[in-house]
Length: 502
Image 1 (cartoon, rainbow, N blue to C red):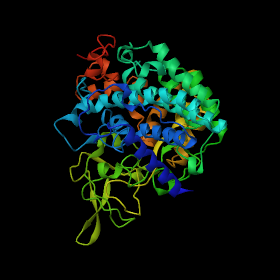
Image 2: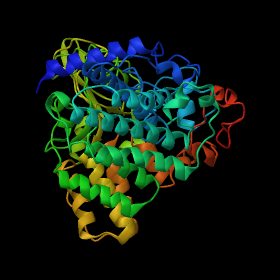
Image 3: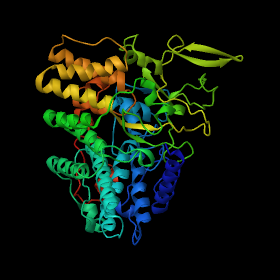
Image 4: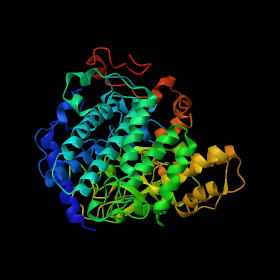
């Protein structure tokens, strides 16, 4: 693994991105809506190196420009919101009631932490739209040019898919001639069918060109398998079971398999990838764009990591509620990373504190491991998981069951995850309904805090019901976030707000 090369590459991308735009500020600050044109450069791409830098810079969109956004661990993070808006996680911090609003599903167009995905990803989508024709005009290796354009289409499809799942159809600008035009602010929202078509087109065109996987210095880039996984997730949300199964077949044929030790997907052993990881953000502990900031948010303030002799500076934020934790089989191996008792240092000795007995709000979510280098107390170099094969196997099992009931193949995928990672007995003899419930349980046990719980509950029709079961009163409209108020206001009536929001 060429770790030094990867690190330098991502640092260069960060510098380039910051040069292109002033938008990347702390994720906890409010964001004002601005035109898509802010990320546009002109007369920039002249050489192959220019193209390489520009394409690499677009990968910062996965983190939405900062280690705290996108797949980061703060309130604005996709993973955080997938937990805090569901039964998966709650927070010790109130912070002017914002964390409570997430759990209550109490959304409004001025809640910048939930509208931020729209603000950032619209810009990245527009920037890619302008980059593609610029790259086409550069004299460079033609095969590399085709690959870079395919990567950009994969990324654009990914960004559009996130926006679609959070906001429904959004007025993306896919015509480069319109990006710099005032008309770009008055494009109406497309139909659902059109939006899905935009996403599918980008992914399918990327799949036709990209390699199955990226390894070595190119690890972390958008590959064919990443595009297939994204499409599979889209088809699952649309309940297009046969299409999802087809994507699953193609991913399986590439040759992924589960990592024998569950925790090795989330510690320093994940550097450079393994047979399970499909897409990850290559983390650099000293980078403001790609550092992995999970541990400070998830660990108790008195947590002491016995494996590396401390080194963390935790803030004690997120926990898994006890009622969710108690759904796990006590023999489940994955509880190794989900702690009822956790290590502390008291009087020079390691003492394990009982969180439940101590009145804590939930179990400690110790999913991402420490970085022995300890170069930062704020972040680690453990790569951030975006997609992995265990997720695909469980989606595959779910789609097979929905289409044909619990087939032998569906059992194979469900039980592979259950027995390899959970080290639990295989299941058998289930009905279609009980198999569905088993898959739902397994996705919680396997994928907690990986950014999938919100989409899962919405697909199963349980997202709003969870909040109601917890005593809140959200309307059914909250399965979509509101668009930023300014985006609606600046469109002169062309862009309509999602129903249920003023």
